[in-house]
Image (cartoon, rainbow, N blue to C red; front, side, top):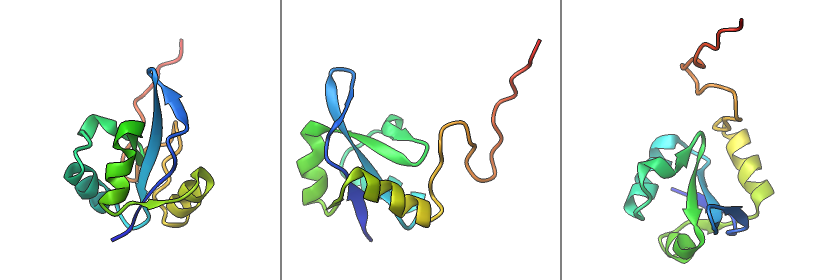
Amino acid sequence: MTLYIDPPTWPGHGRMWSHLVSDVSFEELHAFAAAIGCPPRAFERDHYDVPSDHYASAVAAGAVEVGSKEIVRRITEAGLRRPKGRPAQGQKLPRQDVE
C-alpha cells in the first residue's frame, strides 16, 4: 500500500493544504485517510485535502512525499483522476436545466 502526499502549498480558509492520493484505489485512500484522522468531508473527487498541521503525521504513517505534478501523474495513470465537472465512474452529473 502506497499513498502519496504533496507539500502543503495550497492556500484555503486561512491555512495551507496538501493533497493525499492513492495510485491503487479509492478504498485504499479512504482507509488510510480514516486511519490518520481525516474526516470524510476532506475528500474531494479524487484526493483528500490535508491541512499543513497534519502533514507530518501523514508522512509518519507512511504517505510518500512527492510534488504536486507527481500526484496528478500517478492518479491519472491509475485511472483515478476525477477532474472538476466530470462524474465519478458510474455516476451522472446533476441535471442543469437551461431556460
